[in-house]
Image (cartoon, rainbow, N blue to C red):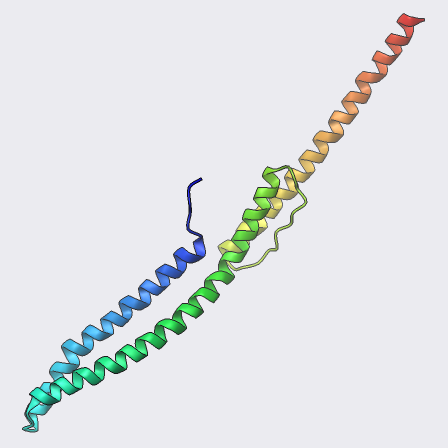
Length: 162
């Protein structure tokens, strides 16, 4: 059986990657733009920029690292929570589809989520209800046909034996 990564982990990876790219953009901006601006300011005020520039970059890196770590932690947690809320209805539809594939039409899908997920849940529930009705009609038809065929055969058998 092929291993597949769940949708929640794929979406979480996309969100974390987006946050990491944003943080790297901030780091590059600080090193390229803010550091150069700092050197210009030091030259304007006749301060030797070499030592100050090094201290500025160390402090900026330290604060960016702490901010990035906290931001990544908070955004990952929030992303996981929001993604889980969106993928739960899809998991319910999957479980219900597995039950239907086994012939059990009793499973109900909670219509939840928003937008496309809610439409998927509602449409799947309608399909499940129609399959349940079709299966009931099929079974009733088989019972009726069996009865209708059995009655004349029983009469014929009685006539032949008599």
